[in-house]
Length: 265
Image (cartoon, rainbow, N blue to C red; front, side):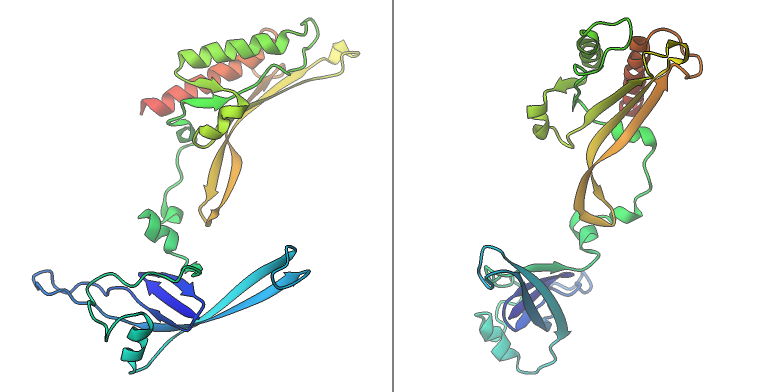
């Protein structure tokens, strides 16, 4: 099996040898560029799990690797394996990778690729998650009407949300277009009320949460939809006045307020 190394990222080819990238430059006043080649040997093991292995439709592959520096003076042989003649054109680019070469990166590869270490970034203020949002998905049409409201309860609130968000520069997109919006921001609203048969203790609550797609700093390969903004209110909230619809609309005003504050900075 063959392995190459460029910068700090291992990329493997199912063979035996690997070459490396360019060493740090010397004094910039020196006109002649320099390079240092290092070689590695990589061991690839492929375990097969499932039925009808290998090659069956229900067979899965699990790969593991072990690498060691290759200390050898026979560099001419190694160069010839890569199609070079005694390391000619050492200041040029390395040979192309084998088409079946998997890629294995060191733990700091995310920082190298991004240009910064995501784990070292300071945590943003809570409202920053709303910066740059100009589109989101929202659907209040299925809200269950509370006592005294007809079946148009959710539809009317939905229209009020769409109109207010539009005035704030935020477009509400349908579900089938959400995948086109970066981060797929979705404003979810949960409305509940107590048993209608016990009006003496009747209460209601509203909870809203904006979800977006996020990557985990500890592993940028993991992407999930996570709640990044929330607001709650209801009949027991301090200073609450008005109806259930008024409580829901206060969520809307809270979202617009926080969105404007984040985007005014």
